[in-house]
Image (cartoon, rainbow, N blue to C red; front, side, top):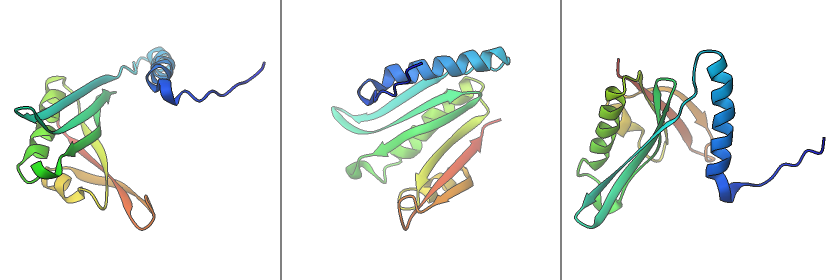
Length: 139
């Protein structure tokens, strides 16, 4: 065998699909299909993009991969509405809950106010700060 590790960053989507297919085949054999359901929502004011959220759901939990609101639109409840939209979608799909991560210099208190509970952290990510992991059960 001649092993070659290829940099596929430019074709990340194709690599992710191949890896997901391997995970699904293994999980499916155990009766726990690893099907990923992607979600994305955007907030607009006319033709001005205000922010957006992306998430991926598998095994009954949705992971919020990205959430951002433009600086000019902050304080208007847009982030809360975006989280609310994901929550509604996850509930409609009968999932257990949502989890996400944020940094100490970003929005841990925002998520606490929305009913998320912290279940872990990683120090020095980046140096001098920490990464915080939150979850919210919807059942």
